[in-house]
Image (cartoon, helix red, strand yellow):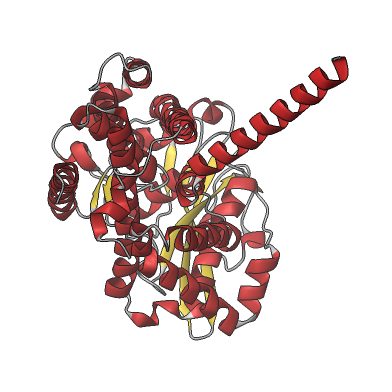
Length: 299
Length: 162
């Protein structure tokens, strides 16, 4: 196994068209989610009138200034402009400035007490893009740094989540009755959202069988704990596939969806650049063969 | 080590230090940094909320606790079609230790124009693990009418003015 940092950044590997194309697709996905968050939060902030729980910068300044005069929409517009400046390479600090303004948007949106984690990973992706653009003049190096940075902090985040569970509850966290509690909690939430109560097959299975519920939690805890394996190229696709499965499990058992998180995992888990190169090469080859056949027929 | 790797690791270490300092001084959360503590306390009781369209005039019977959602007064008021976030209402109910005029107005603002022509009852749902079963108790908590806001008289929440 290679030493740690080449595993993360791999600066020596040859740059390919597929990798460049994939990076722009990745950047486009980050842009889409960041703008969705900025505008969704911007409109929701218009309904907010008080700070129940200050988060982040709201601990140091009164974030309620964003509640009035549609300032949250102005902030969303500024974030849009800065993201465009970053995406089209007009200003290399564009992404970093967008991240800072989005922090204010987050602090205002989640001032009613919810601590949402659905956007954290996308925020980290934006930070990775920002730092890559600021510190690396050569595009190839910026791309490699962006992904390496994300693998490190994404893996660290999951390991911290596992550590929080072991510190907060201990190894007994995997007791299936805890999953019953969370299913009951989420059932109340679903009832409040839709006015009806309905359990799916996995929830029924977990509620009927304590060993099944315990196995589900054990899988989740172990997968999070071993998420640091994404720091190494060889184990990366395997552990990230398990993490994607874990998120599907969370969606089925607790009806908590982290679409931005799951999309990012799917993008980072597999060698899409290489696959794009192969796909384009085979397309090119079949196009070349067809053209040769056609020219032979015509001659 | 080649300079590119040194530079990258230095940036990584710098961000790691900033990450650690910010989460350590902000109860584990400073977006986009977090220690991801969700679901870390297994088996602990929880408090959520359910919203109902309130029936007619309030009476003493309205505030009685129930053991089943089917026994709750009024009709369900689903939050999803109204584009109201369930977590926000649940957090108003579970994390507000003081219900002053500002807090009450903030809750009413989340519902906005919905309260112009109807009354909504916010019910506190408390779940706990009793040996081998999960029990959920539903207690009507706040009644929001077009003109006024009433609290369950049996809840000892302070309602001091700002």
